[in-house]
Length: 471
Image 1 (cartoon, rainbow, N blue to C red):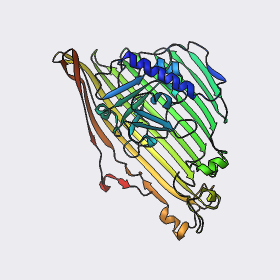
Image 2 (image 1 turned 90 degrees about the vertical axis):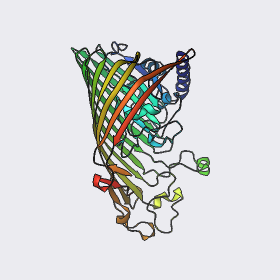
Image 3 (image 1 turned 30 degrees about the horizontal axis):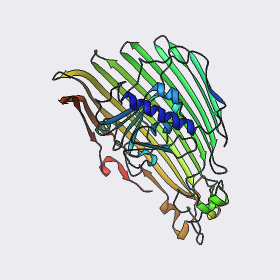
Image 4 (image 1 turned 60 degrees about the horizontal axis):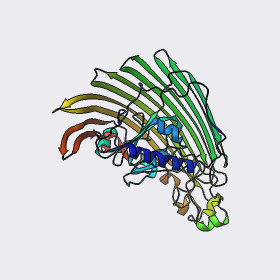
C-alpha cells in the first residue's frame, strides 16, 4: 500500500472512530510506567512478516500497524476493518465482540466466508466444520491487523473464499509497566482494563484483563464480558524463541435476535417482547509457537494451538422465525404472544486442536529475490450441537410436553455430532507459496508474479465419522 493510500486510510479511520465514540469517556489510558516501550524483535506468525511492501504477496493485502491503532484508539475492531478496501464489518451485539465480517462482497453473516486468525491460530468455532464466529479480540489488545484476499489466502485455512484476517496481539514490554484504563457512559456502559507486564532476563510476560458491560437498545437487555490474556515470550538466543499464550472469555447476554415492526417502534422504541432470551459463550484457547532461524535466509516456525468453546442460546425465536413451541390456537408469527409460548434451547460444544509447521526460505531465483513458504497443517475438530424445547418462555432445562400441532417433543429434539458436516476425523493440508516467483518489465513498469498452492485432505462420508445436520 502506497504512503498516500495509508495516509488517506488513516484519515478515514480517524473520522470514523471519532464519530463512533458516543459513550462519555470518563477515564482514558493511564500508563503507570514506561508504556511507550514495545517489543519489536519478538513476534508470532504473521502473514506479511513485517513487510512494508506487499507487492510480493499473492492476491491483495492490507495491514494496520500498531502506531495507527494507537492514534485511532478504536472501540471495536470493526471500526478499523471497515476502513480497509473490500471489507464489510458489522457487530450484532451491543459491545461489538461478535462480528459479521465479509470480504469481496460475500455475505458477512457470522464471518462464515472469511478465515479469522489470532497470532496465526484460527478463532472460529470449528474452521472445517462450522466456521461461525462468536469471538473477536478487543481492539486495545492488538498491535496490528492483517487482511489478505485472493489466491494467497488459501495458505491460511479452509474458509478463505473471501480471504483471511489475522489479528496480532501485543507483545510483552521491555520494561515493567502497568496500565489502567476505563470508560463509562449511558445505557449502563462500563469498560475497565488492567494490563501488567515486563521483561525479566530472557522472558517477557504480559497479563491483560478486560471487563465490559452495557445495556442493549431494548429494556431488560444486557451484555457482560470478562476477557483475560496471558502471554509470555522466551528468547533463548537471537533467532530462537518460544511464545506461549492463553486466553479465556466469559460472556453473558440478556437479549435475542428479534427486531420489531415500524408500528411497535412508534408505540415504544425500547419495548422488549422477548425478555427471557439469553445467550452465553465460554471460550478458552491456548497457543504455543516455536520460532527458529536456521540461517540468515531460512527459518522454521511451528504453531501448536487448541481451543474449546461452549455456546448456548435460550430463545423464543431466531430473528425472523416464528415463535417456538406455541400451543394450538396461538399465532406464532406475532411476538405479542411470546408470553403464551415456550422456547428453544441450543447448546453447542466445540473442540479444536491443530499443529502447523512452516519453513520460510529467502533465495535468488534467476537473479530475482524470492521467498518460499512451505508447510503442513494437521487439525482435528469435534462438535456437539443440541436442540431442546421448553414449555415456558424462561425454561432453562428441557421440559417440553407437546409441540404445536401435537408433534412429539422427542422427535424434534436432537443431539448431533457436528452441525452441517462436522468431521471428528482430522483434516490435513499441505501448503506452498512462492513470492515474486517471476519478474518482468513492461516499458518503465516492473511486474511480478507469485504462486500459492494448498492441497487439503478431509475424509468424507460415514466412514470418516461425519454426521449430517439434524437441526
